[in-house]
Image (cartoon, rainbow, N blue to C red; front, side, top):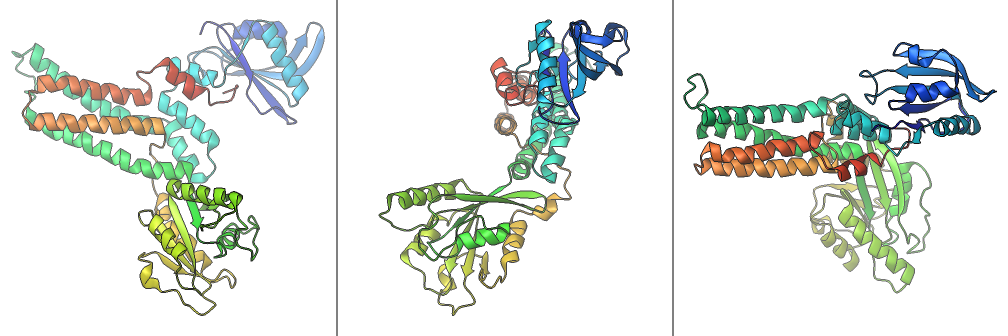
Length: 451
């Protein structure tokens, strides 16, 4: 990190301002070469300086230049931000001048990567910034901020501190057995402590499911035979004509999607091709897609025509979704009912009429109830939602269970200490105390150039 990087930090286009960010040891020297105003090497940190960007003797733009000196800068290095007038041409010209005078174009996420490597952000905070940028609803924003502000990291650090205290006590017993003031760290003491750690890890994992819902939303698949009202229901829930609706069976041959926000959580609605036996090659592909989406979805809304008896195809759908979280919709209750509910074997049954707009909102209420969405609005949002983090917590829980088993079998605590040390180190991987370069490259490459 001995070089100086630069990139456009704002979306390039017509706007009031654009920002070009520079970070590295020569940030002030390089910017000074193209800036006409105060000598930036002499100004105080956290100041804004007026002047012009120059291309030799030509004024390129009137700008404000912000200077941030270490250690109180975003990356922990010398950081300069040039606030220029918005526009593609002027912004690109300023960046070109910086590159010509010694800067290197930053890689995606490199500013944040430098902040991490310089100890300004840990890995959870860095990943939370990505989540914050991509948050599409209020609950996702709140959860991301818990990571950005370090509250999520504190949860992991407190577990590591407890483990470190255990390790230290065992070490004292081994190295200084004659030290009278030391705690005699026995299997009974370890039993209580490891039980508490295991319970906290279990709670983190259980709540991570909520975190994934907040971050990714709920994937809801609408399934049923052709012409039972799937596309019409999708349009009703979205309050728009998203899917084509006709009386011709097999109209929907591909996936149609739409999104709504329910109690602050994103609901991803997917209308699938009607599931039935067909000789039409295109429709057959759509049916296979529908079956795959059923397996991937968080919730299945299975729709049946209440004015008809259950068919073989209806029963096959019920069999396919029997182990999935589901809601059964009996449509067309404005007509004479012929469908026998006793064959449905599902407690989440809602009778509706899409045509007469009866009980449509009951579907949304049921989704909210099943996923406890109203309760999410009162939570503190300190959840893991990142696949990497959750995978490591699962690994930690497995290690904690192995330690508990060893301890219950009477293995000496000084021998168990190695496994406790491994657990402590694995928790450190979550916040980036230890890491692999390939992992950092993968994480930070997902950001834009100016982040």
